[in-house]
Amino acid sequence: MTATRIDGKGFAAQMRGRIADQVAALKQEHGITPGLAVVLVGDDPASQIYVRSKHRQTVEAGMQSFEHRLPSDASQSELLALIGRLNADEQVHGILVQLPLPPHIDESEIINAIAVRKDVDGFTVANAGRLATGQRAMVPCTPLGCLMLLRDRLGDLSGKDAVVIGRSNIVGKPMAALLTAENATVTVAHSRTRDLPEVVRRADIVVAAVGLPGMVKGDWIKPGATVIDVGINRTGDGLVGDVDYDSAAQVADAITPVPGGVGPMTIACLLANTLTACCRMNGLGDPEGLTL
Ligand code: NAD
Image (cartoon, rainbow, N blue to C red; front, side, top):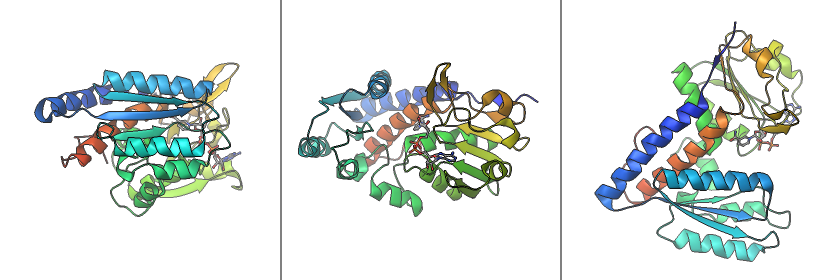
C-alpha cells in the first residue's frame, strides 16, 4: 500500500484564498483592515526566514503587517514596553513574538504580557487554560492546522485512538487538548514513554512533534492509520520530518510530507487567527470556515 499524501501546501493555499476574500469584504463593508504585529529579537537565521514568510503572506492576504526587530541585547523592559504599545494600538489585532527569545529574556513574562484577545499564537496562560477547559480560545496555529487536515481527511474523529508524540506547550499539549475535544481517545507520548513503538501501533491517528529526524518508523504504524508529521529537521539531506516517510507510507492510509504538509498550514492558521481576532474585537461574527 502507498499512502495518500496529504497536501497541506494546497490546503493552506486554499485557506489563504478564503482569508483574502473575507479580508477584502471586511475592508469594503466595515472599513477595517486586520493587522498583525511580529516581534523578532536577535538574528536567529531560522526565525528570520519564518518572519519574512509571515510578512509576505500577511500582505498577500490584504492585511497590514507590522514588523518590530530588536537587537539580541534588547532588555526585558524594552520588550515589555513594546508589547504594551502594541496592546494599545488599534491597528494591531494580532501580536506574535517569534520564539525562541534570547536566554536573558523571561519568555513566559513576555508572552503573558500580550493582550489575550490579540494572542494569535494562543501561547498565553489564559488562552491555554481556555482551550484546556473547552472555552472559546485563540488556538495555537500548528495544532490548529493539524486538526484541520485531520478533519478534512477523516471527518468525525469521535472514538479514534490518537497518539501525540511530544508534550510541548506549543504543539503536543494543545494538540492533545484539541483531539480530546473532538472525542478522540488521546495518549500523549514523550521522552520518558516506555516502548514507544508499541504505543504508536495502537493509534488510528499519529501526530509526531518531537524534533528527531525520521524517528517514527513504518513498522510502528498501524495499517490504515493517518499520520501527521509536525517535525521540521534540517539535515544534510535537506528538511525532513520526525516520521520516516518512505516506510510509513507503505503502511499508513494517509500521511503529511515534510516539507509541504503541516508547515504551510501553520502560517495559514496564523492569518486565520488574526482575522478572527480582528472580527471579535470589532464585535463581528467569527470568519466563516476558519475557526473550530
Ligand atoms: P520541543 O523540543 O519543545 O518538544 C519536543 C517533545 O518531544 C518533548 O515533549 C519531548 O518529551 C519529546 N521527545 C523528545 N525525545 C523524545 C523521544 N525520544 N521519544 C518521544 N518523545 C520525545 O519541540 P516542539 O517545539 O514541540 O517541536 C517539535 C518539532 O516540531 C520540531 O521538529 C519543530 O521544529 C517542529 N515544529 C514544526 C512546526 C510547523 O509549523 N510545522 C511548528 C512548531 C514546531
